[in-house]
Image (cartoon, rainbow over all chains, first blue to last red; front, side, top):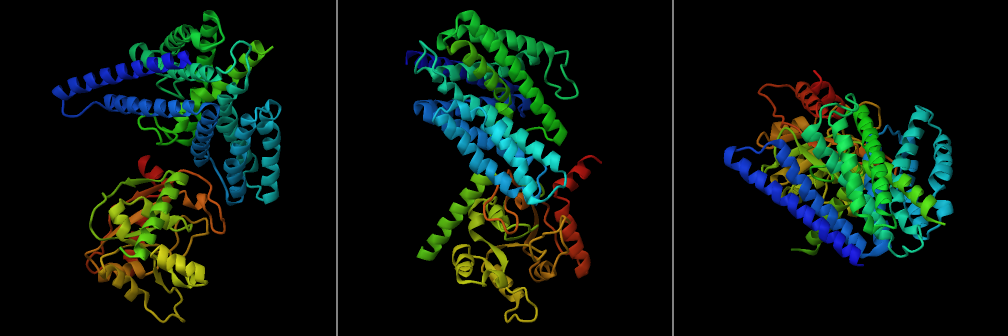
Length: 313
Length: 218
């Protein structure tokens, strides 16, 4: 348990430091100008939201495995809601849509709860992916059929299947690391979200060459490389949370960050396609749940399977 | 406070909480701000959830005095509906049927305004099941504007509710909704009924996402 305590002391320290810096910048800017620059307003609300998010995650951690499962079921719910809002749905899809929220999410997380790996890893990509188009076909409305079905499936994949691989880490019983699954989750969240912040910081400071100018003006090579290197170092320094050696922890963190980068890029492409800037407004300063979870969505399943392959005998 | 008033308040709070939980509804005060002025909110109508969504978007004090105008022919069809509409939701029930009705809807709506209530009206007269974004407006809105020029007429576009709870569906799909409040419309001197209704309809239509996209991109 000592690790958990140190982890939260560390997080509190980082957040307090961030708040202190933001307060100082705000105070300085207030003296010279009447109106705060929008970057600073955004920074303030982002930091405030971080306090709330870390608070929420801490409460879930206090309740252990079940708390974390409920937390991520909620993240899935909020993400799926934002996603489906942006898709094309027709009257005939009503039942399927309700099923996505009221059947698929509970079943997927229940399977995690009872740790049935054989089913939770194929429930969505096998059973749901076959059942959903079948039910849509029964409803009889074939207008834009392929488009509707694919959008629904991709939504379930992103918001339910991929996200559920974060709490799925708790179902891995690594020899010599029993009962410490929560720390592995904390490691994944801290490195992926940390890399988001670090990429943002490096991008703001040194960003020049855009990775994909058509998709996102804020993603630069300088931000990406700086973010990945610094997040790998962050991961290496957090090796004590994990069953990994220092070098392994750095590599795993680097990999999670690269996946996270792709997650953010894909999310940006979807948003651009639909002509919106943010997925929603749930988290002040950040946008919606998916704006915060997009990197985790891509990182979690890959992280999970690598741990499972190399660390489970 | 009477028992009935307490029931009403609890019910309103529960429904507003439910609406927020399911749809995360956000008010967008685009053309006006929340205020204490007596108002008539007129909105597009696709779903039973519309009036709950709209009233949840209002500040609590305004919500408490705002009553929705609903079709008596529908809400009096059985006892349960009648109790729901009259006692719990505190709706203003008006008869839409021209031939059989005994009470004049205008008299009932004006009486509610006289008591200081704000009203929610759906000028299309029924839930819109067509592919058209908005049906033709009935004349009630014009008559209200004529009788009470002191009450503000606020157009409110309810977004996505037809997808959350379409006609005939029992369970709502959780999707994000918004209610966009536009600039109040007032009856101009010598403006005739048809012109006014068209103008009011257009002001509501201008708030729809499709129309806003056109307006934003030139």
